[in-house]
Image (cartoon, rainbow over all chains, first blue to last red; front, top):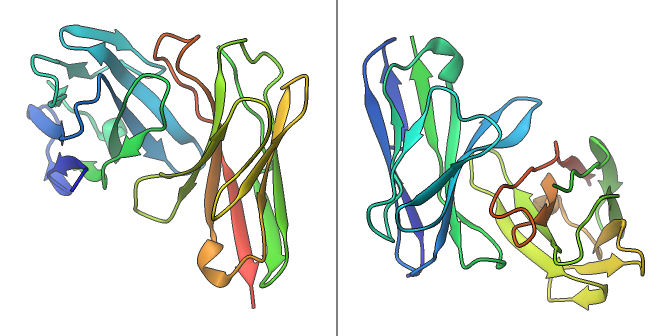
Length: 111
Length: 111
């Protein structure tokens, strides 16, 4: 089944403790991207990748890192999480110019 | 980079046709217009995509005037299960991968 898989679905952590949210897709998509969603603010793009080893900043990249070493994986790294990064995170992938396929989301709480 | 403007919320009743309009004044020549539906705590789901004139699929129609500065998503005969947030998105090809979602339109369908 074609899908975008994010892990974990829920994560509670403390300020400053490094964490990684994984994203994997099985559709051979070149394009992958990360979003955060906060009440009243809609979806905001964090980082995106047009292909392997090519990443770029979205609208709200501060405090996040990404890597794209393989086509199928696009992990989101928070090196020193802070409470203002508490949010619902979505990963998405697509062929360039085609509709996005979204994962089921990761709800992160930083205390 | 094309930004979009949509109504924040709309109300409707079961069986009615709902039209949601999105404004995108600075759409680029190569940009497509894509609409997504999102239920609470789920990732957005693709509804329909178009470039110009009219596109119809099994769930919706998309109307795009000749100047392409706006688009209208039409949902025929809505049901309670159509209660969701609807996002209009413009871009990918011209923006090089950077995407800006608007705040979306929260549609509430009442019995």
